[in-house]
Length: 170
Image 1 (cartoon, helix red, strand yellow):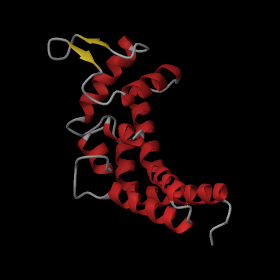
Image 2 (tube, helix red, strand yellow):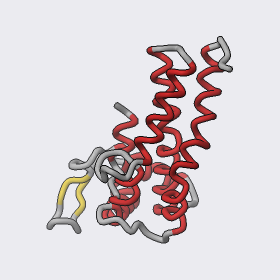
Image 3 (tube, rainbow, N blue to C red):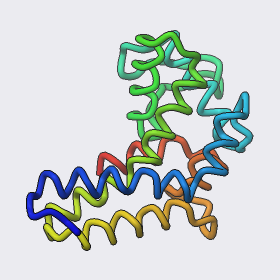
């Protein structure tokens, strides 16, 4: 079933994992895209301060946000990659900040199992090991048993928007 060429094998498994991940998380992703705002407790604050950062601080990597907690340096507390990427995409695209956040998080959710499979393929160049790693990652992402971390429930439901981009860079 799997080709003996590593590049073709990685591409095949990566592409195969995208519809699997979409199927496992379709309900949550659809609700996320159809909602005008984030219904999560932490997501709305990430949207608001992220948009402030994109409009008033970016392209500086950090600055001062005077309207939160009587002023605070930002982004210093949460992993800043989320804010840097969304600010850059917001500045260069015609989309709203909310649409940029939804696109980035959806892309990361859908491609994380593929990225895990590619990483597994660098250690064990077996198509089955890559597929198993990707499927296990997709299953872990779609689990609703633990609402903290990088799962879809934590990222979209709880609103831990900054955690998934930081995890991808580990």
